[in-house]
Amino acid sequence: MRSFRDIPIRQKLIVTMVVTTAVALLLSGAGIIVLDSVYYRTHLRADLSAQAQIIAENSTAAVAFADASAAREMLGALRARPHVIMACIVMLDGTPLARYARPGADRSCPAAPPGDEIRFTRDTLIVTRPIVLKDRVLGTLVLLYDLE
Image (cartoon, rainbow, N blue to C red; front, side, top):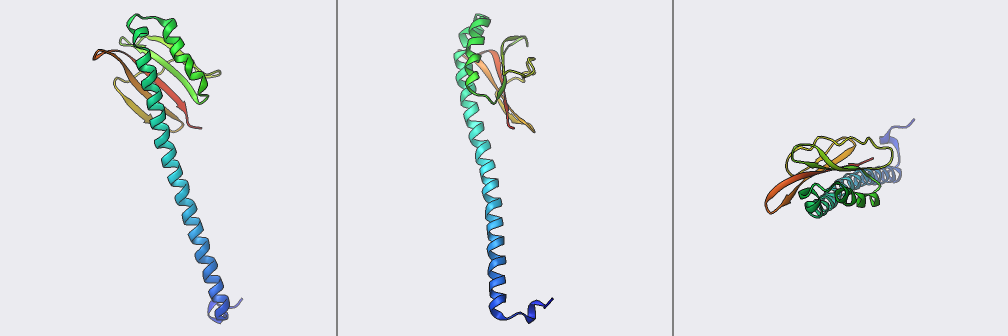
């Protein structure tokens, strides 16, 4: 095999251009993948945060009157989102008022950390929203979203 020094200048230029182009394509492809992942997570976080806020605000009456049927109806709207694994409305004392679980999902409600939180785990996104009526926290909405 000939060394790079012995190759004619024309072939050296071609090899240099091909290598440069390949490196540029690989770097730009990697950059696009990273940016797409970041944008996806940002968009997903905002979208599920808004969805959780809507459900929490619409569930205030059901939680205030401990109406499990109305609370289940609110959570039932999540059937339209197939990646939602589970959603629970948990009272202040920690007892679940209502839950929604997609078919095949574990039916137990996860622990509801107090406050407003959005947390990514390895394979899920967990959103918690307080259910508030006139500045008084009545309960918590917990939503689990499948990232796979």
